[in-house]
Image 1 (cartoon, rainbow, N blue to C red):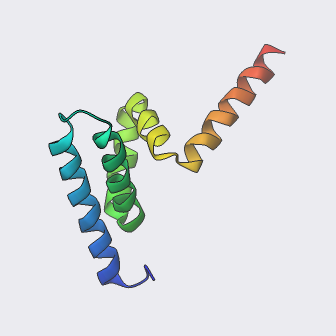
Image 2 (cartoon, rainbow, N blue to C red):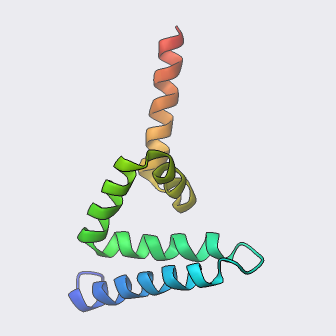
Length: 94
């Protein structure tokens, strides 16, 4: 379904819109920002090569914030990296 360029563009625009809405509702009480922003970011990352490049550059420059974003989005690659780091630290202790 996402192979259509128009659908991918629409999902990317929806993701950008959700991120903008998340910033607007951020000051309101409740976890709205923590739910809406990651969903918008995921839509952007899944549907845009440009967004992926920008995200990778951001994570390279700010690894702490990139790790936080990966945890909020529950990215499989982030969980795999954390498990590998834990395994390496256990192996180093031996």
